[in-house]
Length: 460
Image (cartoon, rainbow, N blue to C red; front, side, top):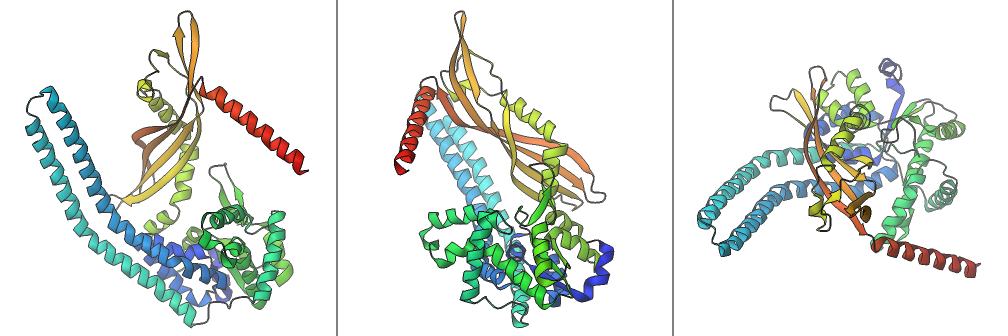
């Protein structure tokens, strides 16, 4: 859909939001939530909510609100805890140094303690300033609840299917999952794991949650049958391949259209081809422009993940990988193992680069968007060798996980980037296997494989 098409369909438009859209209104910033709620208020008469969406919303909204409360309560508490732990470690080190008669240990301990106490006071002052932000979050939650209450009172939430219909959907869901027929088959493994992990979810409702996308799809089709002359937009941030046609690089795939199988199914059953899937960022881009209420910060926040994915995995990928390799090559191998002395400088290759966390915020004048990005990487097995007389001896194989923090800034006046900057780097040892452990592991794997083969033989 293009911007110039909205005016032609606005009078005959149905908008069906997914659960993830309703819950996102709790998760995002106060500014973004307020602007999206304002936009949804403009089209609130056009909204229809599937019963499954509403049910999942009710099941998870308290959890999302609890996360918000814990976020504020734990932030400064954790900061103070870290400072106090640091203070304890430093005091312990200074106490240990006293047995060597180091001079002026008391002066050093008092000076550091005074400095750390000032940090605690700074954190406590900041804690007081969070009260306004907490109040904003309370308003945010109330605004979302008010909008959903309106839809409930106006009969905009569909009735639940009967138990007979539900059983038919479940039977159909089993067929669809078996043949990877959309929607929802990507949820099967994850939801089954949740049930196995949590005995409280091992019940009828818990076991059928994996068919949730299919239940929603069935309700969308029902809406389409009832109102076939109207244009239906399914609003979802679930951008997996069991809903969407995805295009792009492996780590930067973007949704471009609904799955063709779903479009054909909808057309066959409803007799209408007036349906489109849309992410919240695309919806906001189109409809906020139509209603002349566009906010650039909201636009950036809604699209920050795909923007950063594109920057990390295309524009800056080579530069990031070079920086990670450079940092890994400065490692003091003796810190990993006391055996790694006088080793030959190892060759290091990284296996994968992946984004672990993205935070967007703004500078003090509000004119620059700042993306703080935490990137993880794993290495391929690194061979540790050393010279032993005239021969080279293989002594170990090490695998590492590196974490690098980068920052990208964008000028809100023209959305140009100021380039990438690297902030800090750390690493963890994933494995450190010596020449004895590897043959043992190979032997264990061989025995396990032989055991599985014998079991298969006797079972058949």
